[in-house]
Amino acid sequence: MQNKKVVRLRRAKKTRSKIKELFLPRLSVHRTPQHIYAQIVFPDGTIKACASTLDSEIKTECPSGGNVNAAKVVGKFIAVKAKALGIEKVAFDRSGFKYHGRIAALAEAAREHGLVF
Image: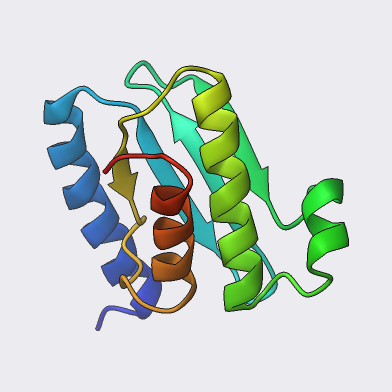
């Protein structure tokens, strides 16, 4: 019997193998019940930009980190940081999570602020 985490990680592994073929930086997203995290990871494994609900400037905008509004703010911040580094096109890595709720909100906010994926 497989649990939810094992199934999610299997989906994430499959997605990441497809993303490696594209040779693009990936926007990797992770969520917990209290927080949401986003990183721009290059194919060589280096992390160039990151944003999460633990960052002080994001925490002032949304005190609760486990909701859709917080995900939108994190999406906006990661897109602004990526644009500042000259990154416009990325591959979206949802880490095996369903494209729904907070994951979708973060993705839409990043697209609105200039990231292409």
